[in-house]
Image (cartoon, rainbow, N blue to C red):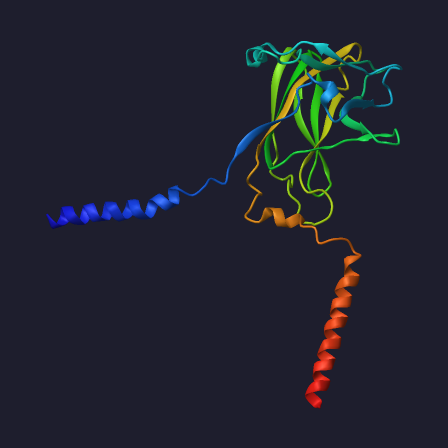
Length: 264
């Protein structure tokens, strides 16, 4: 009997002490965030641009938006969604070799000058996910990201030696720093663009490639802590230093006056 009572009391105590532990909020909130689905180009805050290596044929690459989407994504569409579009490129080179071209976001400033626009990726990114249409050429797709310390990394993604659409999932290497310990410079990882390289022995005429549904998976709470919003508190401009000096001077004057009263 006593043994049964002891077991019961032990179970009650275990429940009482363990419930608060299990009741703690999770520090993980994994979400998938879209960078561009290419369906609403006019609504994005940037446009896609390109550049290519020296032996690209004059007048190329050519870029445009085209109707279409991977068949696997059709069931995800809802009534009222905009027409499905994909981003496509056609590229020719004058000779075989170490040829390449890049696709990247850009913005146009008030002065009319176009500049690269790197897209910040919040949280701790686990994967970058996109669809690519291959033309069965041995070309290699790479993802370019800039880490939180300002260095650009080239991450191999896939080759295009296949026909049609394929979903590509790129795991983010753990050696890439995603949060900076510095107060200045980048604060997080950012997406720079795509680079496509040719195999030196592959044909370089009439190459086509399409992209769709670019997104990433991230733990958005991993670097959020209690009081996170105070990190960027505004203490005013440098002009406020003068007021601080005045207060210090005023305090010194009061202190001197008190000393004089004490001496009297």
